[in-house]
Image (cartoon, rainbow, N blue to C red):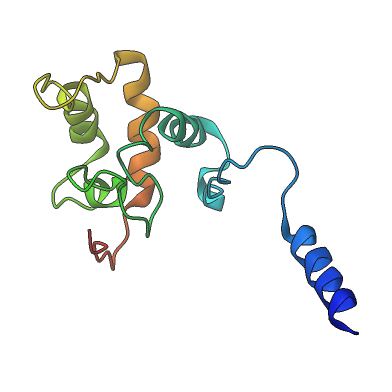
Length: 127
């Protein structure tokens, strides 16, 4: 007797949890310190171009297990923003494994964002 109202109530509760529009996952918002300037542009660019293979935010695991997370790159010992730019200019020059190139105009903003992921107590995620 109470079964139909209970089922209807559950259905309404589940419907309230549904998002409007498409079912694409909502990307994590950038941290507060990348809210503007080149680092924000680098975050936006990495979200569009890099997130298919790399984890672009701290604490994430890369979709492609062979691709290092941006946090792992940022926390490489001895890395500076200058050495990171050099790395990015040559990072995808392996056509046998990937068909992607970081173009020169993107290098500075990507480096500006990636370097923001450096932390004193970095522990790489389990890939």
